[in-house]
Image (tube, rainbow, N blue to C red):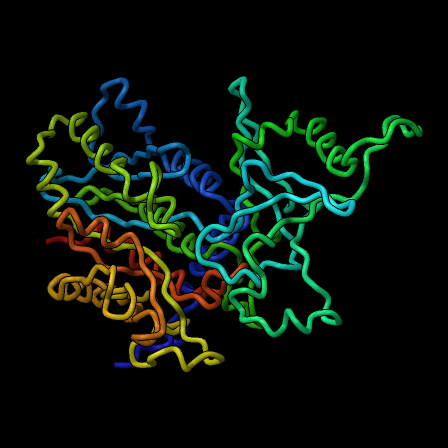
Length: 467
């Protein structure tokens, strides 16, 4: 039952295609470090592929034709893409569902303060992280600041070679006896994840005069006002995300892997939407969902728990003259989904937490998790056996490298995806994605071969899956 190392099967043409995809993916990973940037990047690619803005088509009442690609977003953080198929909606959809949020630190609403002649931004970490991994590394800030006059200021600081970077400081080893005795979960605590942003005090006109209160903080505010026209109060209506600075890079002498921030789950998001954009007219309408908030429970107006996707389908069916409540329900129930999310790759340095017969290995293709959840499958979607059988058939026919996996040993922990939410409609759903090392770390590692096989899998699924 051991799966083949996919590298051993590639010819020169496949290696060339794989490397081309990897280079494009690294660009996406480097430039799309937030949900908003992911949506912007994907829409740009969609437009280049000839996709139609569905919101405009709905407003104009213009029906779409089989083969038409479309996109529509919610609050710039949730994106639905699709291709109209030849069959009526009632027959169901083929859906790829990935998420575009990643663990990070978010700047609080009242964040700016000064202490001991340093200026800091107070943060609240987002998603499951090992907090100690985020200290003493260069950090970048991305996001938006919405002003009271309606203007929105885009912020991107830390990745341009001329930009400054920021960091969370740590205690020197020479004074760390007490700190080093703490457990990893509290050696760095959440409230200590404040980023250092300045140390130079403001001096008005370079002259001596009345002392300025909190002069370092005042100097930072002066810089923000001059460059971005931002006042301190504007932080109240800001969404600023603190992420690792630096671009995705090849890893290894053989350049077989990619290291970069946010591969959970942008590696599946990119391969999913590119598979859709590169597809021809399918029999069943093909959909790609890029969702927000998965790392904190898929909640909110831009998470998978929202009604946005269902509302889009109502609008689309109405536009096509096919809408009724019963047709919508049949469409959802007859749909097939690959919940495109990463899985834990086997790491021999920590082999004791994996069950090797049921673990994903880097370089052995896209992996399928019949269930995730934790311990007794709690909180999981457990995929139907007949559905897995049909997936096996189309993958083997297309000679796609794939493997099965669980998320570690039964009692070691676990995790979840958006699979169970889509399964609530009665859809057939299974988790499928790329195995990564260092999941939820500031820098994660993936195999170029697995990325290529994921893209191939998603593409054949959209074209050939039937129920």
